[in-house]
Image (tube, rainbow, N blue to C red; front, side, top):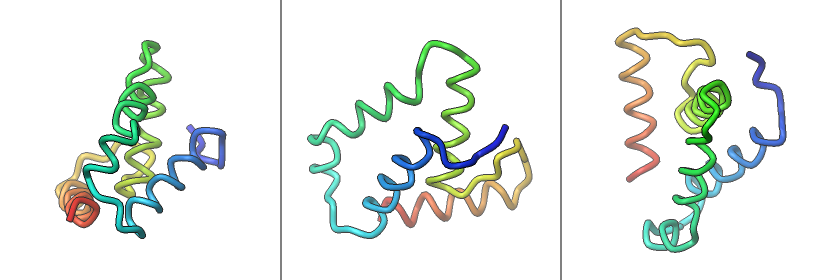
Length: 87
């Protein structure tokens, strides 16, 4: 699976950048419709597409590796990045 710039990858990077670098409140995010749109995007009915999109999301937002890697270091670093995004 290649993570070159695709029609899905660039918008995810833009959303991630906005959430990290601006003063957008949780209220604004929820009421903008972003949460519902991301949920729809990540839970498409086709299992192969869903897996691909979830991996892209995790790669962009949490810097998770493209390939499945289940090490303790992976969970620690992903959790730390998620905490940074939410604080």
